[in-house]
Length: 355
Image 1: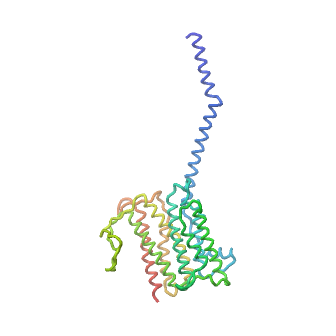
Image 2 (image 1 turned 60 degrees about the vertical axis):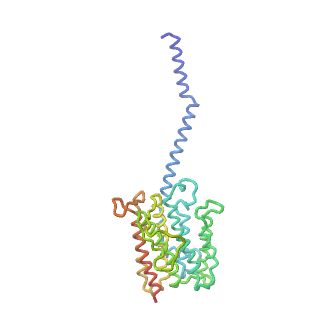
Image 3 (image 1 turned 180 degrees about the horizontal axis):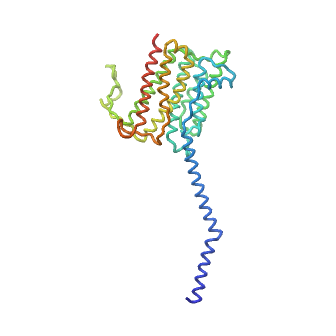
């Protein structure tokens, strides 16, 4: 090899060496490493928060909750305090649980979470039902009596759009509803505010129980459809003169789409979580009525049946195998608990109707 060729080869390698360790090259590599590290960290944090935010809130003691609220507001625990404080706490939990209210989130991890927003909607349906019953039934002695001024304001705020991000946001509307609910609760515990009342009458309770029965019946049917089933059309059964808008087949095949199985499961779970607290509040506020009707034991059995729906779900996904197939079906298990509790609830309401 000639001296000239050797010189050129050495010069070429020197340039490569200098280029490899030049400040410009290191800056480019540093930028790539920084972006990569940031991306990995972001993904890990989002996944962790998604897991943490998907944790369902713990149950709370309804009696202690009412005592804590009335103590902070310097009022008394009276008839209806436990039920009202329970509704307020349920609505507050919906907004202040880990991650806050997720249904209207527009950024990760709330954006991609699915189970918790459905759980939230189940709780919200329950809050809407009870707030309406508070306004229409529990706070009024007769159908011709005047509605409470704070409950008139609270009920429509809870019925605001559940996924509004801003102008106004869902959270701000629900907090206004909670504010009016708390104002009613404060007035309820003051002897100089006779216009705020809560009536523990058997007929008032029956009206709310009818709403609950319809909700549980619907959940039971939707859960059962996860495995697919053939249903006889009984929409007009029991009334020979009854009519419906459009004709439907005598036999209907119903099956929930696999993408909606977990949605229905967690919506039911959220509704029952809230319902359990309200039934325990009824056990306290309506104790004298239940003892007189000999219905206290029936209510406790309903609570026991529904508590089984809140057991931890150890599977990473909600399974929807066929009825007697190799793979279990979580929805059918939930439906069995719901159906049994609903049947007991109907018997419970019958006891209240009887003398």
